[in-house]
Picture 1 (tube, rainbow, N blue to C red):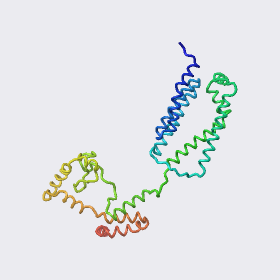
Picture 2 (tube, rainbow, N blue to C red):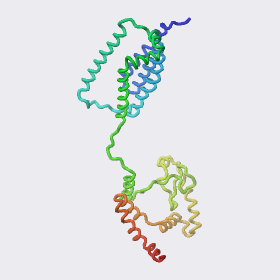
Picture 3 (cartoon, rainbow, N blue to C red):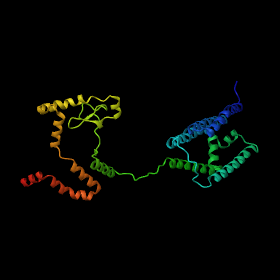
Picture 4 (spheres, helix red, strand yellow):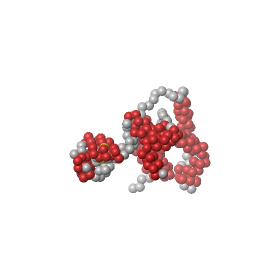
Amino acid sequence: MIVPLALGAQFAFWMLMPVMILGALGTILAKKPVHSALSLAAVMLSLAVQYAAQQAPFLFAVQIIVYTGAILMLFLFVMMIVGVDTSESLVETIKGQRVLAILAGVGFFVLLIFAVGNAVVGQPSGLAQANTAHGGNVQGLAALIFGRYVIAFEATSALLITAALGAMVLAHRERLSKKKTQADLVGDRMQAYAQTGAHPGAMPPPGVYARHNAVDTPALLASGEVAEASVSSTLKARGVVQNPADLIAPTQATVKAIAPERADQPATAVASFVEHATPSHDAAGQRVLRQAQDPAQGRAQDPAQGRAQDPEGQASEEGDE
């Protein structure tokens, strides 16, 4: 038995009417914004089925794709950016906004009465006749949207643009301080190095000078000691860091082969070798700090300081000449 189309539309209306009413109440009365958005999704999907039952396939597709799939997702993204637990301020920042809201609500209610009265009064032509007059449902909608109701359509587009701008305003955060450039960050690191002795460069990653670069393998310094900052404190607390003795063993063997008399103290031997083989970094750090604070002065003082710090090199150059 084939159910008539009119009975099918009535059946869909009476079946989905309780769902739409409950969803609308949930949208308004829900305390959490996410629950309100889910209730609104139920209303939108039920309305899409109503469009399909009324032989409006284009509105059915637009309701699901545009409203449920795009507009509702925009609401959810705004909630994610702003935060669902954000406390709302009860202080009115715009004077008289309650009066304006009441006037806007009354005006909307009057427009709604006129719209319903225009639909009830008179003899409706019917959806089939309206679609036939323009050659189809999509053509009829195009004639109404871009013909009779073009002003309302443009006003709706302006409203959507306003909603997008509102989302950007809500997501915007004012910067309380000036954004630091790369030169500022370098100057801060060098100043911390000069005042507190903090390392101005990056910390060594795991596995440097070790057997492999796993995250649980500490890096080794040039002296053969373990760099404590090269592994995460979480791994240390879990006790999954590799044994430092196994990592230092190759260095101990190398030091023993080079300096047998210092085999019992390989780290000290390598450290003394590195100390005598490399120049002091304190003067270089002070020079870089002065360059960061005053680049012109730093460049002017560099040549003189370089000659003053390397008298042997200067003497060797004079001898070569």
